[in-house]
Length: 234
Image (cartoon, rainbow, N blue to C red; front, side, top):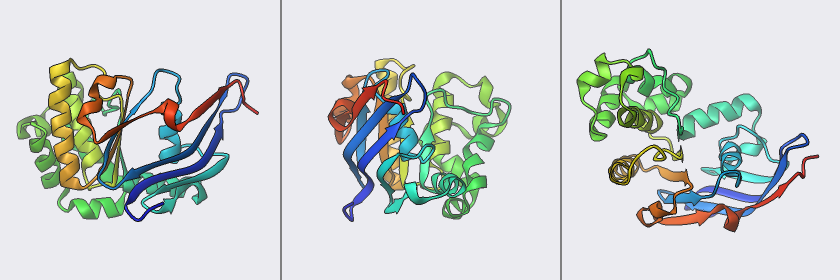
């Protein structure tokens, strides 16, 4: 892993157990600090498995996964959870907001599990409102509405603010634009990139839509970095 790398996978080999499992191998994959990378792949190409490996949700059978120079494969389960909370912000495809909580409560939620990230955020409410304003969300909506009552676009921006608060070093976005039309996708990416730049976060966004590639520093196909062997479970 070079000194400028935010993420580095080397010799990663992972097998899902069971008769329908498959084997994912990633010889080498690296992201530079502050880089914005689009990871392209069709359904079943292993994108979700790769994200789970990067986030330490599952462990490879072999290889190393370095995030900010820390090998997550050597951490116990609890330590991996703590590391992920501190260093990785996740934007889920379905947003995964708490519907009856306010947007503010949703945005500051990661800080409850990440003391260093909470310290970086400073005054959590003020920081949440600042990020939300940068994403075009008015203060009244953040403080008074319930997340479940927001439009899809508004929920999406709340999910982005939640991922960004406390300046995690890496943002992982799983198909966050899949429900948006082309104009909305472009506007969303403008906001996301601006906030990542401000936080100094590396962005890895997963999508099946190669039309987005020109917006990123580079795009990478799962076929180029990984090998899938279906039915190879042990």
